[in-house]
Amino acid sequence: MDVLHLTPRDNLQNILDKLTRPTTIYLAEGEYIDKLWIKCDNVKIIGANRETTIIKWNDFARKSHSDGREYNTFRTYTACVTGNGCSLENLTIANTNKDARKVGQCVALSVNTPLFYAKNIDLKSEQDTLFTAPFPDDLVVRYSGLTDDPAYYDGFIPREQLYMEGGSVQIYEKCRIYGTVDYIFGCAEAYFDGCELISLHDQREYGFVAAPAHSLKQANGYTFINCRFADGGAKEGSVYLARPWRDFGKCQFINCTLGRHINPALFDRWNDTYRNRTARFAYGNLTCESEPDPVVWCNQLNERQIADAEDRLTKAKAAWAAHESKEMK
Image 1 (cartoon, rainbow, N blue to C red):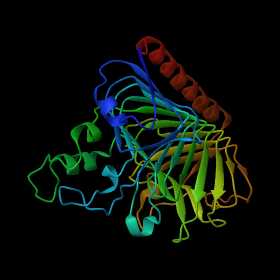
Image 2: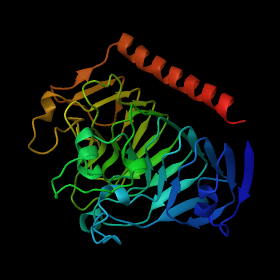
Image 3: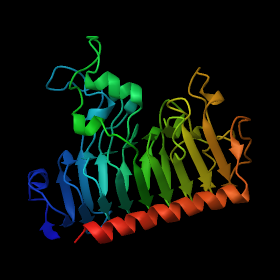
């Protein structure tokens, strides 16, 4: 395994583009102002301190791209990971745009890879902070030019960032994720273990933490375990834990602590859709500052189901440890 020690004076993207084997990169404190794409497998990036080691950029959905079209949500990322078996630790990734009402979505981190791990990182943005690929199937068709319809975009998003056959397992441990609307979204089997989800103030006066879009064939969706849902300026009762971005989106909230900013209903159905009839939302052992009154279409988990979810997290961590032990040599 190769080891590199870098500072903000180094061209981080240029170095990432040259990697061909497992590499650990240590980042010194400072600001790395760059839009990053991590393509090589088994790259580990470790910052000196997540408070002071900061990767930041400022693209946004309504910005005009060089191809003449707007960036759209999925080209706004500050960092994108497509290399398998990559990990991030002890750093901050930020999309520095403000007021999503005007600029649209502004992704901090986009992860499109079969296996990914993050620990002690901060993800900062407002709307659509963290994208956990795969994409919903209909968007793969739309953006990859698989039809003759001119309304579909051929090459709009690079294939490596768009298309991934199979599923993705992603683990976020002791991370802090900031946002307003749908700030964790996608189709991955993703585990958030001991994380802090911080809902910021939004002048629209509402917010949603998660927007899952899992297909019905996916057994596992988003699992939040031992997480704290904190008020970062959001008004009391203005934020929902999740709403389904697509039918059958799945998420579970277990042993979590909810601030007063979380709406007693817990979940929203997504505007005027009927996705409440297909959404697979559940909760168990919540500690709430306000008395909860969950929507009738969600489920309360029993002790066995909670234990099963905790077991899946344990197995996901074990799979990551086995991968790291084998590949990061």
